[in-house]
Image (cartoon, one colour):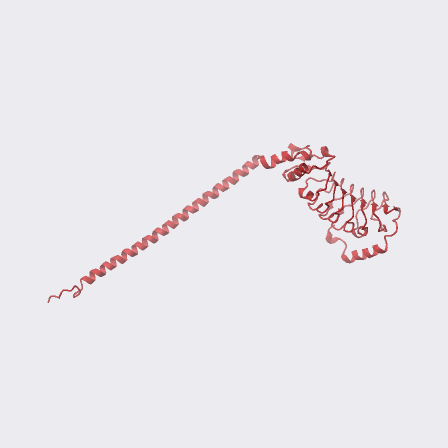
Length: 315
């Protein structure tokens, strides 16, 4: 499901208006007390209607909910705690949490998540605890997923199918203290290097460190990802394998060939220039010689003209 296929503006405004009218009762089979709504284990297949707008803690865990409607959820502007674990939620879109900007605790573990849009959590600047573990088909996270969750202190990514993480995704998580990464098929290749260095310098708490291991390359299989920073740095930066040497050899040959061709072209241009310059000089010399010969002939002719030498002509 994409943003373009979501509800239109008119429908959203209508739902918002209806939400202001309703939403003061307690959903069927749920328990409501002291700004807390508990709908645990009610076999719900959809987000329950009529949740009081003053709700601050909402428990939807252990149901069969497949989708979180943005407008209904967004009406709970005072919500600080949301437990959606153990449901069938497949996607979290950019607008899902658009109205719950006070949210502090969010649990989406044990769902069927396959997609988290890049800016799904962008309005959750107060979020402290985020659990998206045990979503084995998630496989990847965009580097902007946590871009605005600057208050995040606890992040659980266990068993999410993640193979690699972009270090840029953690750039703004300056308050992060606890990070779970185990039970994922981490590919500790050169693309993973920046993230492993981040794990070394960030001094985070990794309670599951020994179980967060690489599955490849073979030489690093079984290594905890918190300890592969230096081996990866050697393999990716300082170490050269056979392919690297072949590549360098090809580059050197190309540079040598290019230099040879450039030198040959320079020599050809120099020879052509010299030939042109020499021919031009020869033509100028021939023109000067021709002009001198013509002048000599003219002088000789003038000296032999009768009456032109100052002596009287003999009769």
